[in-house]
Every structure is written in structure tokens, then in C-alpha cells.
Amino acid sequence: MAEVLAGVGHRIRVQTPTRLLPESLRVEEELDAGEWQSISLAIETRAEALLLDDRGAVEFARSLGLPVLTTPLLLLNAKTAGLISSVRERLDALRETGFWLKDEDYMTILKVSGEQGAH
Image (tube, rainbow, N blue to C red; front, top):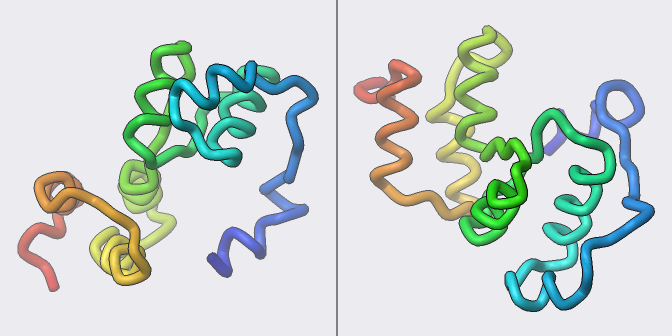
């Protein structure tokens, strides 16, 4: 979280959508307010990628043709780019705070990152 906060104003810009998707869609798709605003903003700005983790929100955003990136894939990309040294360390820290990730998906990410046997 500290890395994200450090990026605000430098690499990260906080922006509010000017047009939201219809409220009926938010309710129908069971999106929380943050997901609803994020998807609306991604449509409005034609975002390169939208960071979402909730399965329902991810599926809905993809059904709209939005490019979605999940946190585990973001971490994998960061390791591949040499920005972080360990995906496992960050995923474990997230899971300790309540971030839900299926064990199967966790193991797949570790395998792809080359960290399956590492501790």
C-alpha cells in the first residue's frame, strides 16, 4: 500500500468518472460502488487496463470489452519486468490481510513466476 500511496501525484492520478453506468446495472451485476465507478471510468477514459479482483466484476468488465488486470497478474508482470523480486512474498502478505485467492490460482501464479518451490 505504501508503494501505491507514494505513486499518487507522480505515476498515479486519482480521477472521478463524469458519467456512471446506470444504477440498475450496478445492482444487477452486484457491483460495489468502487467497482461501479472504476468500470465507468475505464469506459470513459478508454483505459489501457482496469485493475479488478472480484470475479463478478472482472467478468462483467470483460463482457464490456474492457482489458482487465488482476492483482496476481500485476505482480507477475512486475516480477517479469524486474520491478519486484518475489511474487510469493507479496501474495502471501495480501492473503494475510484477507485477500482471497484460490489455492489453485496461487500455485499457478507461483509456477509461472518460477517461485513454486521457493520459500
